[in-house]
Image (tube, rainbow, N blue to C red; front, side, top):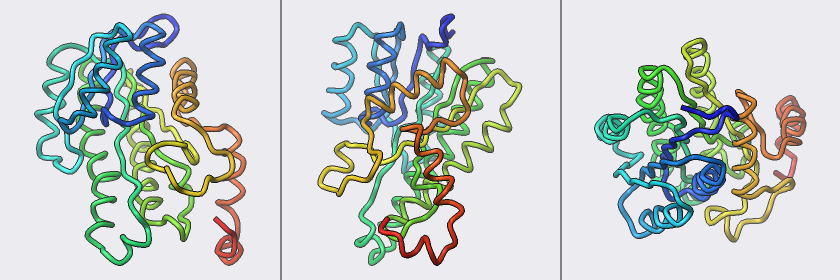
Length: 251
């Protein structure tokens, strides 16, 4: 169960090598989270992530999980929930893709969509059902401001995040009153391995800042969290711009 401050005692990170996922896990472990499950493809990177949290004093377990293999999700996540209640599930996996390349290679674009959306729908529904069965818990979904309005520069990624965002909002409505809390997190440009070498966007943030916002959102039981918060106003304006004007913006 969560403590009096809303901090989960147990955490499942779907996307166990995600920089935002690990930053969140580190922050929560420092705040009293004791058990962490890292779900991801077996790899040296997943092992390093587990050791990092072990060194902070957490009990850490790993489970094989592949976003692109939805048929395996039931067994993989069932293994985690069979070991005991999970107070928080953080859906943190996703790929950025290469817009220019993926436009020329549609199968690559499909892979982005399957990872960011289809895999998340599967894992999200299975996790939500398990949380509902235990009667409590939070499902935190990493969306993106890119899903607020498709941009020419990354509309394949943005469209997949738009689908994920809509799914998570609907799931939150479906679970309202069940004891399960769904929180959608919309970061802007995050300085990370995924964005290394890219031109930095205004109001850029870091994995640690996103982790801080997630913790605050949990305490407040927020339904939507923007990181940084100023993006709420910026994206509200951009979302309502006429399409012809938006098309000419250098975004």
